Length: 195
Image (cartoon, rainbow, N blue to C red; front, side):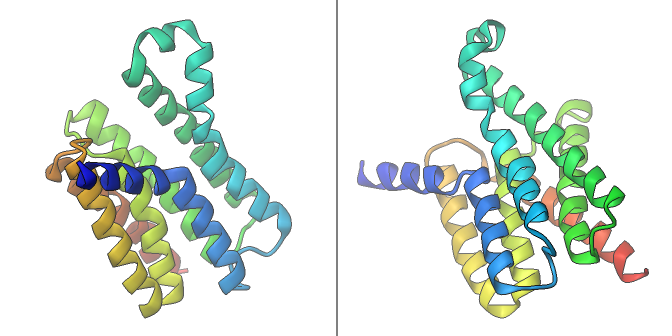
């Protein structure tokens, strides 16, 4: 009983919007070569963290989504997440964001595209939750080095355990979601390194 309560607590405090907000805050404090203005910080918070959260209050207000319960809420969250990620990626391209920020924006954009292909077209269930929590861990590890990696591995292990314990995901779904995020990070990294 105590184990399940702790697992639920871990899941609650590490929901993707909280993880993304933590990523933005950490990178804004620890590095001065990622966010070059307050506008970039605010837009990143709004489009990567806040917009996906709107699925929860909106799902209670839209009757057709409310009828579908948790599944409707999950689908709305995916749609809003996709909108936020696409808009921030386009903003990054049009505003000529620096390479570090463009790497983050492109990674998030590609993650939605790959999840859509896997889950909707190929019918391979990859966890969007796993993908979303892996993103901040990957980026903090990349930008902060070893100390970020250690904190990231511990955080990932806890969230993986909590997700399996609460039966929110199978190990395979979680690993596919994680792999989606890593591929979404590596593709733009390789492209930007050639520029």
